[in-house]
Length: 120
Picture (cartoon, rainbow, N blue to C red):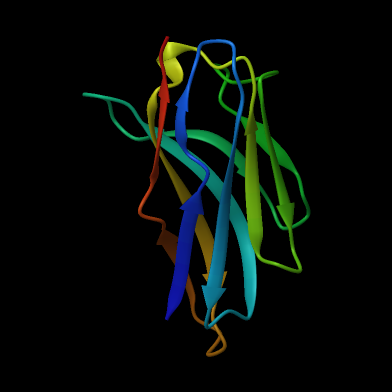
């Protein structure tokens, strides 16, 4: 079994910052790409940021220059540093990981999500 767990959400004022974390654990041989998605009220889930196992990153245009994704390979974790937050960033943020388990089977796994609310 592979577990993906997010943390770090909360309420922040416009212009503020938050840092999200995501940890993959359990039956893991290797973690490939990891991603942050978000789903706002009455919106579809959308990709926010992506990082490969070689640490190449890509971002949604709406967060470019404000959000930074990083990873710690030893801990199988990623983080999302979010600066200059705006109300439109309000969403449930989900972590998504592509994991090869010890039986050499590749699957993708989702976390349960963490709520980020940007409001004054």
